[in-house]
Image 1: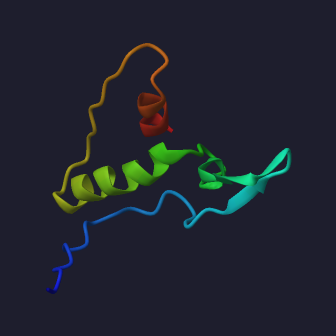
Image 2: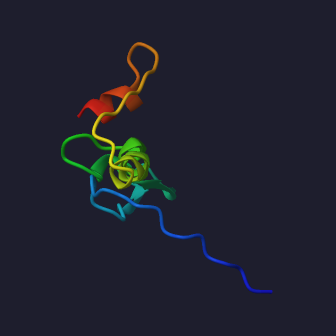
Image 3: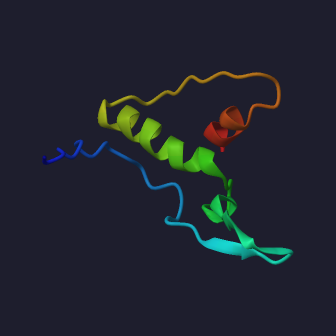
Length: 81
């Protein structure tokens, strides 16, 4: 059986990937994915998701983005940054 690969979705580069995976000093059997280091402006997994969301918008010729979320939404903050 051969699996078909999904076509690449358009992206805009907002972060530096892949991010490091490091052992936790206090518990060396546990490792942590350092998505906080993905961007000096706003780190975290939101940057990875926004690369694809904004890439599709740009590919469609969109110039305005509307987003919403609850008070203190990290998605809204990352989109604004």
